[in-house]
Image 1: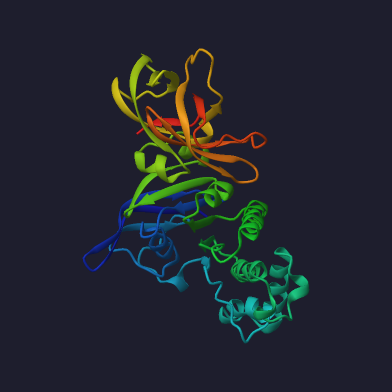
Image 2: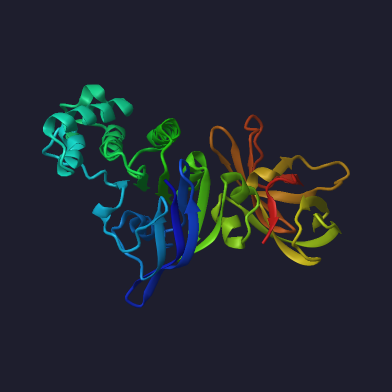
Length: 348
């Protein structure tokens, strides 16, 4: 079932948490609300759930106006950051709880709860207490408890923030697989860019209560529309350069002795601040002729196992670059020649 926001505003006293946003979550898709703390993403999720009501605008779910309806009158379920499992109930009783509150008999609720646990791979854990489960298992119980209510929309509020890095990766893959397998409509909140890019059909990036940009993960990362997006969606280097248009679709950017052509239909000739992704910088030993490269000197070098990270002093400023070559790492003071790839640069 689709979710639509039409010019929705939410205020708390004099403070505006959400400032007139509009978007659509298509049925059967996973859309992530992404942004820094305080940007309004959790308030937006809570308005979908009916836990908060807007001051202005309209909210629709499956074409039905739910703007003034409370949480129990909407066909939605939420998985909270804390999972909110009842410590005195076993796994099966936790999953049964919402079904029993909705009026199902104990027999029917138990049957449906067992089906929900089977969906998340916990069918053999029904008699365990929450304290006997790992963080990932608790998260799955919370998902099962939400799924058995058969909601039109499933909401996730920072569901992986309490897990370690390896388990976060595993659980985000499981959430995505479950969403695709069941054809669920999911709205997912996180502040983690990699998590958002890994699970989402579309991402809505929020900043200061407004939508900064929305689109698929590749568009947002490779074609950010604002300087904020270029900085927020992964690492980026701001560098000053000269820009000259070559044709209606392409511009040439000059950084020191290095020139690069990129697709950009909006930029005007003149000085520009360019956002350069670290992975778009190839770090080489100095060229013999220095052709089409940006000269620099290694200021910092860090070994991260799978790659090196370098901070490099250049005429365009201090640039941060990643390099997969770890066998012969560069050291502080080494001269280098930087080559820029067309992918990963955008004008801010």
